Length: 118
Image 1 (cartoon, rainbow, N blue to C red):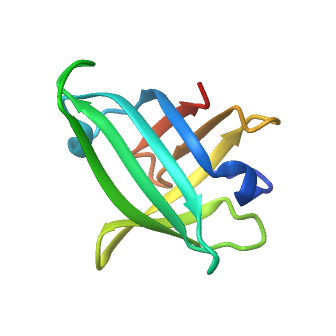
Image 2: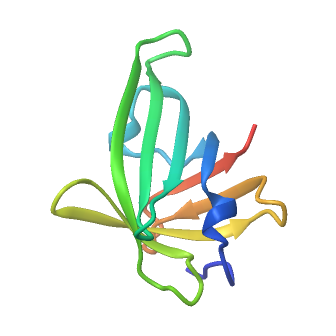
């Protein structure tokens, strides 16, 4: 799987809303997912994922994790961990010129997310 040429992490941080995803076991029965990324001073990224349980009016569930850039020449390959010591690959494979949308996934194509700013 190829990644984008470069990601400006300052532009990338902020709130993203899930438009679509490849079904996965850890988001089963969740709706209206939202991801918020915040860049720390040490270069790590705080990841806050939120979604509604079963429907748009369901209880809000959240998980906070940490992302590390593993390829600094592009910033497009990250490792994300919600449960230490386990971490998964998170690659940015398409990105809008104005950072208005992103497609990201797992190199073995097991996971895929499409997110927008609004």
